[in-house]
Length: 246
Image (cartoon, rainbow, N blue to C red):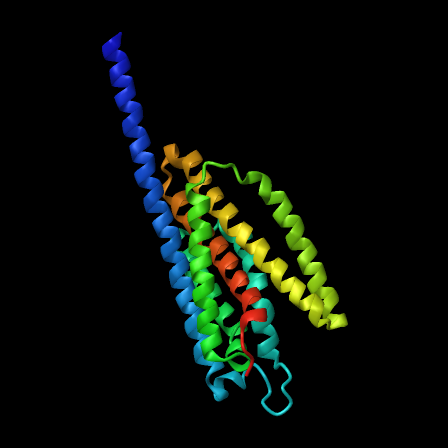
């Protein structure tokens, strides 16, 4: 009986170690995909935003108004995110990965304007602050024993309210409201960073025993997309009140 219990304990310990090793590999893949996406976004945004010729494709240099391609670049990322959620189960891992990189590149087009509106130094400083904050928050979400699932509903309600406030401020053009929106936006996406990291970890642990390589690959891409969006939004809200305008 004692031998059986010992064998059972060793087996359980080996299985736990296997899950832990798999989880670390999975999270490394998530962060790796996210990092490549961030590099693509930053490279495209910088390349287009610092070139008068390329930026004129998105915005008329004489009138300052958006061109048709400019409006497409603004709304395409949002459309692609919703489409990705609907298509992910139909795509192969390679196709899903390519789609994510294409999305990151299109997002770069939509963010090219920041290199016109803000100084390069302030963009770099804000990016560094965002990166440090994101790393700390994501690490907290990964390591904490506290269940953060209860934050999900609260954060989503806050996000909906934030979107409504942003739409309202398009018509009000209130600088005070814009500042409040930026501060609240930073707090919401800071919370989402920790929440989403823990959710990615929990989802892996729940499905680890199945060891479906196709699911694991797509799950890593979806996790990378989620954390990528958290990072980008936190960066943009921070830039609104930390960035020095040209």
